[in-house]
Image: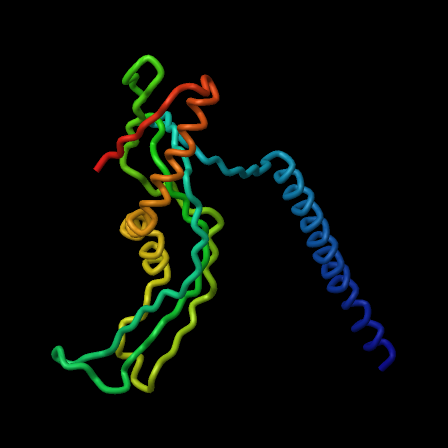
Length: 210
């Protein structure tokens, strides 16, 4: 019995030896592969960058003269409701409100102003049409939505479209019409001071574009 056990153990040694060699070979291959991968990584590096290309198409000189700055605050409202075959569905109303504030600048294009002598010590200043120069520091609060039970049928408001309407050229023209008298008065003050600073004896009269 002891001899058989000894023979069995003796026969296991080749198997164990082969297994040990396989494990060692695998470890060596893994280490070699890791080294190769690291070597490859050192050979092939990756760099990334971003570039924004811009081309100036044209340059235009502007001489905008700001005469008035209006501080505006308000609330823009968008209302919609759902419908079936053109008939409004009750309880489908959706209302969106955006609170805003900004400074609207109104003035003129100074390059279009003409100054012509009308006598030895008198000049006429012709003022072009007033324009909306732009909006300073616009602030728009997060939209506030009020909806009814079936408001999912209504078209939702587009925030960017509401903001564009607030800052539209149509609104600029409205501000000009509402403040035309103040704009004319400020234009007179501005150019009168500019001209009389050269010679206090000069008299100035004004003409405004229709």
